[in-house]
Image (cartoon, rainbow, N blue to C red; front, side, top):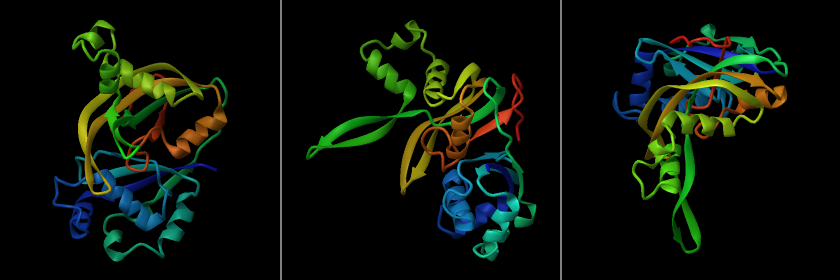
Length: 247
């Protein structure tokens, strides 16, 4: 059974813990990468992945994630592995969960998902081995379809929102997007394996109609797109046609 987990994070203690662990001074850390490390240390690999953090500008953050265990089971396991300094960042006593209900075919469900819409692009070949890198899906389409025309995307009515929504549709064959809009976008540098990777950070709000409930649940469990273990790809569910709250 799939469970939605809520875990409060004490932001100041988190920053201190990250600094003590060598993740860099406050303001230079990739908080999602640090959270990935913290969650893995406490709960084990993939236990709370994908996840999503809300209200990161405030003293107390709200982390949500999907897991196959409920809060009581996760907390019982974590008591053996959590360290005293980690206990200042998270409180296992405040860990909460709810069992996710089964979706029905044809059901309308609102959603709020933070994604990193990238495509893998071959950039060079060394000794017959292709080296791949990530490229913003919007930039990838512009270079592929309109390399010689700077106004090509605009003339083709291919806005960033259109490209990112299409990218999302490709990864949601188990549902039909009834509505979808780009609610937030920024370019953001993340750390992966000690290297900085710059790319798109987008949030899509919308309403979907479920066509395959089994695959829908599997997508909730695994997340959508790349970097789902680092704060991307977790689908928060909302009432249909609803505006997403800020926490």
